[in-house]
Image (cartoon, rainbow, N blue to C red; front, side, top):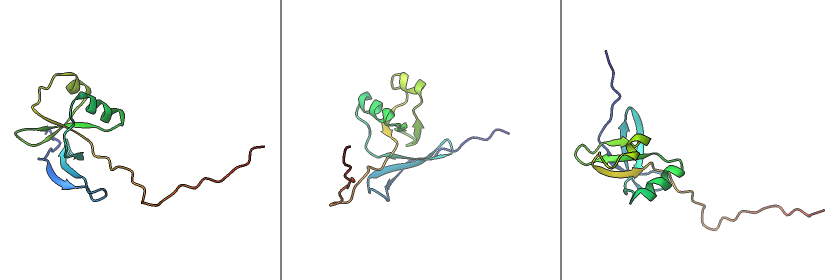
Length: 107
C-alpha cells in the first residue's frame, strides 16, 4: 500500500511573534508558514533563497502551497499562482536598548 504525504489548503493566520499576516498549510506532510504577501519578481525570490528561505507557489484554484525546488524554479511559470517566501520573523530589538561593549586598552 502506498502512503501519500498530505497537503492542505493554505489558511490565513497572523504570526504570534511579529503579528505579520501569514499563510499556513501542510505541504507534503510538513507544516509550512509563508508570508501572505507574494514576492514581486525573480529578484525577490533569489533574495529569499540567498537568505536560506524556501519559496512556495500558492496555487490559484486549490489554494495549496507547492514547494519550489530547483527544477520548478528553472521552468517558466508552469504552475499558475503566486510565489511566497517562507516566513521569518524580523529580529527586533526593544526600543531604548543599547549594546554595551567593554573597553579594552591597547598595549
